[in-house]
Length: 109
Image (tube, rainbow, N blue to C red; front, side, top):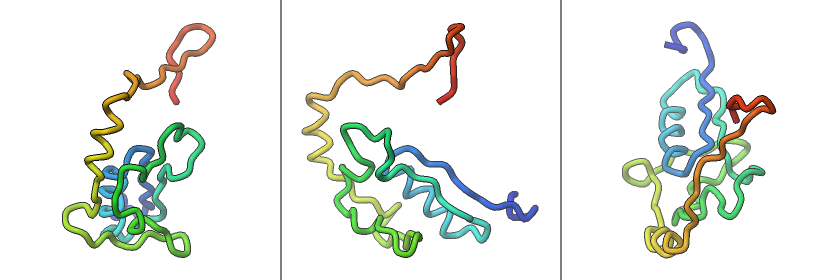
């Protein structure tokens, strides 16, 4: 619908590599894709980086500020399942942070 009204597409994806790959596939076929927000190397990746559990990290390299289409089957992401299983054994019971204002009301991230 955005393309029909000459509106640029800028997906926001601060999630993991599978979600990023899905967004990239949409970008690759959208004439109005302007840029792709993603979280590689961003300040809030504490203890793990976006591609830590990906075997084919090189496929996510940017060249000149652009991603190349992912060429592997499916979404093009090879997850290191053994590493995920190993690290999940001692994983903390993480919960999404809940931020509140001084009056106690819930704040958005």
